[in-house]
Length: 287
Length: 343
View 1 (cartoon, rainbow over the protein chains, first blue to last red):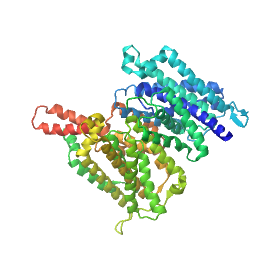
View 2 (tube, one colour):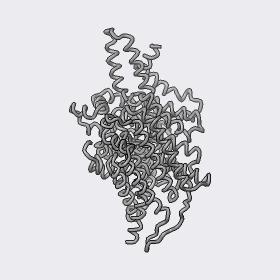
View 3 (cartoon, each protein chain N blue to C red):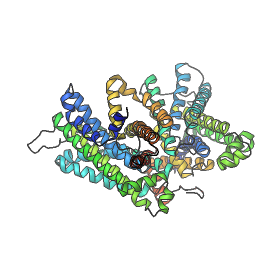
């Protein structure tokens, strides 16, 4: 039972990071209907910017996180302006290929500057808490609290503010949003900024218990895709729930089934789900 | 100018290209160049495969590199661990590619657009993980070494570069010939119809699933056979062959040359291979240039080199002789090509 609880706790940590990344992906998909394959690269850049600020310049962890968030948000907006905006009327296959182009470019740039080595990013919070027989490192606690407060903040922003509502409106009905005078460009830029920010913060939270390397985004982005398919593309609660499902499945499956193949679990789950229900678990209506 | 232009599109061009392929070893200054050319041809065969499902049929398949690796591993494992000769293993690689393509296709092609792309991305990753982790079968990260070369039945020695070059050239010509036959047949037209609109094709009575699966199986067979040839020439393969970067390479070749065109895959593959070769140190950081190149191409030149050429030529022909009766046949032909290049 203790082992189970411990693994569930690990699953919660993983799930909250996956949820953060998937949230950005699902927001962008909701607005532009682009599966942004470059999102994983933004996540990776976020980790490197934090590493750069914190390890190479010796600044505070929180400063690094904020810096990474701002830099990656700006980068994300830049991608929207330079790439996805000009392609908004093209066939969908073009967006996907362009997104892949961005991904390749960002990875190559990072690899040129920092090399392909695995790097370790320390955390200022090294305490380990004990609850009965459960152990919980402070960093994991920070991940869970940080991720869920960000999700809460995002929820409030989308529901309670005017700009947040414009994002929701555009995701629900594009033409309707235009009719009531919503500026599509502003909404798209805003969405990309939020997505980039979430990815960077997620990466900064996760980096201390993981490693920092140029290909670190690959697995995370693919799992984020699995999550948003699981939760219905464009659905915000779906991304959070899906993130937790994958997080738990991986932590528990990795322990009880096979540690070597734990990265396969998410994909096998996806293949199984899509084989049975081609539109994803919680998607509504339209094919 | 017009004569040069017409020449590029005329049947004589095929003969010139084949002749150039045959004469290349004579003009090449080193054996290394011939080797690079042979590798480029192998990749071109794989790109032709991707062109069937992505170019003609309009479904972005992101597992293509995975199927290429499966073909290579089929030959590698069958010859090294099971003592097969190369040619039976080569055929087996095609059959395995087709069979796995069928299995994946039946499940994945029920999905539309983004779902299909994401699904195949995951399939590609599953293939990579299996090759890397399933050590008992695939040798894991060690890779497969001393793979049997194609046997020449006492006539030729395919471990030599030049005979192997001609072998690959033969398969490349065969591959292009088959595609040109397919693209002009009813099946090819059906693929085009599916790309232009699923719903429209279905309302014409086209069985979407059957045709998409057919296109997918054809494309994975091409990938499998190309992978098998690679294993035969390189004779050492590792799990990095299944990495997603190879799929992205193949997409770049296809896009530069011209997606959905007959000669696009060849033009794109050769051009990029030789540019990469010209700047050797560039190899590792090629993506710094390829990444933005992909983006720029998709925005400004979505039809690639061959597609843009065909469109441009078509426009000129159309403006040249709009009323002439004799032009109507050219026009018709041009329209067909146009339909074939529309991205």
